Amino acid sequence: MIDEKEGNFMLNIYYGDMKEAVYNTSAYFKYDYEDSWIVDPFVKEMIQDVDKSIVLDSGVIDSPVLGKIPPTGLSGGVKTLILFKFNKDKIFNASTCGDNCAKWLLKIAESEDRTVNLRHLMDFGKEPFTIRILNTNEIVHSMKELVPIAGEFV
Image (cartoon, rainbow, N blue to C red; front, side):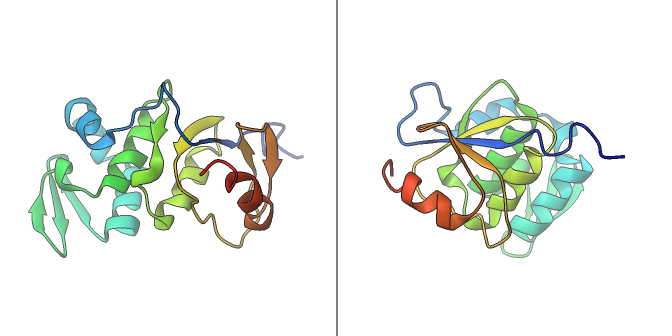
């Protein structure tokens, strides 16, 4: 039996200026993150993958580049991903994220519809995906479909 909910959720992207989007994700993260978020298994995996760093506990991350750092020392991309995961009612500007964050945006949006703001063209890779571009309300499944539409707005 196929799960009825499977495939119903997707990442929604609004390209370009978006008044309601949180633009300065680093400052927002500094005052908003919770210790429990950092030790969440999904977040630990994101931090390992994107920043190549290991979470030692809620307040200490071991970075191969920076040594022992607090969560506020994480990259802008990881901070944005963490905010995106835990603040379902906010829209974040994910232009602080590199292409290595794209798969994580898609993974977070697998369990519920989520919206992000982008001001650049992010590479979501070669695998098929499902993204709604809110500027045009079109649903795309590949970079070949996404690029011409997103290119009109960024």
